[in-house]
Every structure is written in C-alpha cells, then in structure tokens.
Amino acid sequence: MDNLKRTLLVVDDEEDICEMLADTAKQDGYNVLIAKDGTEALAILRAEKVDAVLTDLMMPNMNGSELIMRTRALGRATPFVLVSGVNDDSAVIGAFRSGACDFPPKPFTTEILRSVVNRVLDIGARLNTVDSLLDRLAEENTEIADQVDKIRRQQQ
Image 1 (cartoon, rainbow, N blue to C red):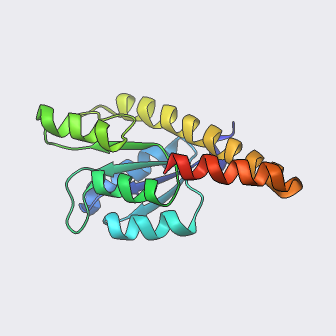
Image 2 (cartoon, rainbow, N blue to C red):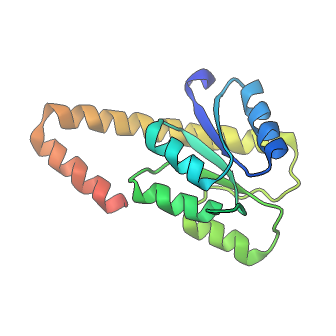
Image 3 (cartoon, one colour):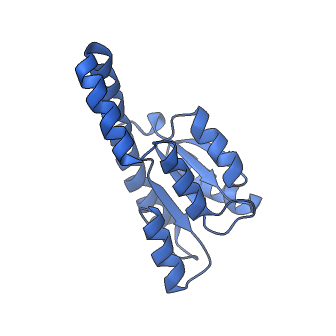
C-alpha cells in the first residue's frame, strides 16, 4: 500500500515531542495529523479517516488509554501505539488492556519508532479497506447491511 494514502494521528501534549514524532512519520511519506491532547484527538477521529494513532499515555484532560476506549465506543477499531516515559509494569499492562497494539518505552530509537509506526499503519490501512468493503456490500444488500450492523455493534 502507498504510504501517502496512510494517515497517522500523533497525539502529545508536549509540542516538541509531537513535532518530532510527526516529522519522522512525514519523512516516511505518511499523511500526519496532530492533536495536543485526547479531546482534540477524539474530535479528529470523529471527522477524519485515520489508519493509526500514536499517542502519549500521560496527558491532561484525557490520557491515552481513555482515548483508546472512547475511540472504541465510536465503533472504530483504529490501532493505537502508546508511548510514555513511565516504565512501570502496571502502566504497560493497562495500555494493552485498553487496546494498545504496542507500547515502546521511552527513550526509543528512530528505527524502533519507524518499525512500530509502519506495522500499525499497515494494520490500520487493512482494517479501513475491510470496513470500506463492508460498507459497499451493505449498500448493495439490506440483509448484509443488517449483518454488518450486528458485527459492528459486537465490536464496540
């Protein structure tokens, strides 16, 4: 899949970290959206098709785990990568329980970041393709539409 068609949402309340993460993804040819906190990120997720989210765990207003749960409540299976300077086992376990695909501990190298981002964007792009195909099938057949709605409700 073409990197230019993939969109990564980067969420961090520290502007310099957010820009560094976004710049790395842009260098790899991805479309990047930026949010300064979970509330802003949730608004973007409601309005835009995003293939993956790279978010800080600890932020004011809404932390990364809560952002994942609220995104799932919207019926979105968008893959998330949580990053944090917190290296405690309970934070890592909590991140995965909330639905994170990965949790690379800070500090991480650019190579690790690129590897993780590439992987989750690939997952997200495939999920979006499946979602689009289901939408097209549902438009063509009301019986299938009912089944698609049932599946999506179960995913929430």
